[in-house]
Length: 183
Image 1 (cartoon, rainbow, N blue to C red):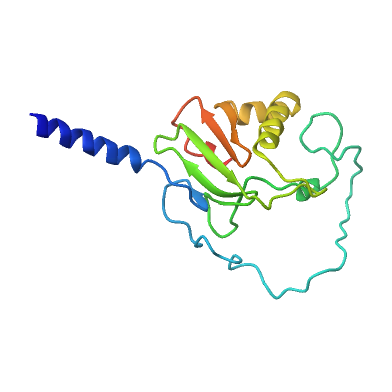
Image 2: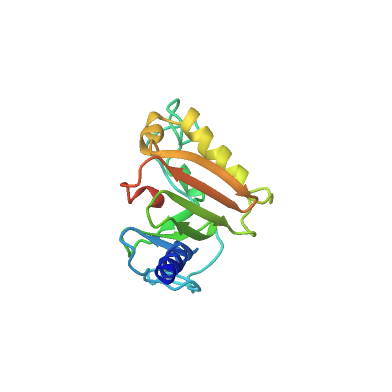
């Protein structure tokens, strides 16, 4: 009986140790991502494209805000291009997110949380490092002051915790929304 109990306990310990491991990408259906951890560019990007120059864009409408996240005002077209996210979608791979500001992503097997490991080299426009407390502040501000869309979109996020300067944890209220860690 003791050996059976020890075998069961050992199996449980092995299962809990194999829970989640940080990875460079997250997929909705847990299939392997197309690109390896050390990929330099996606297949649809030309690494030899000319660099430099000026980006100009026209717009048929006016704007009175550079903040695309609030209801008040009309944001400038494509102002979202100046913001980076923790992870970004690959255009040739549906339901896959690769780390952008976050270098690694870890998801609970039961989908109860997702953890982002921020890149130490990630910086704001002024050179200050992006830290976990900045992610928490941004998320809380988005929920508090952003359009109602964000409160609905992230309604199943229970808590956002800065675990250390480069690690942020999102805990979820429910575990049946497989897409939530990707958004």
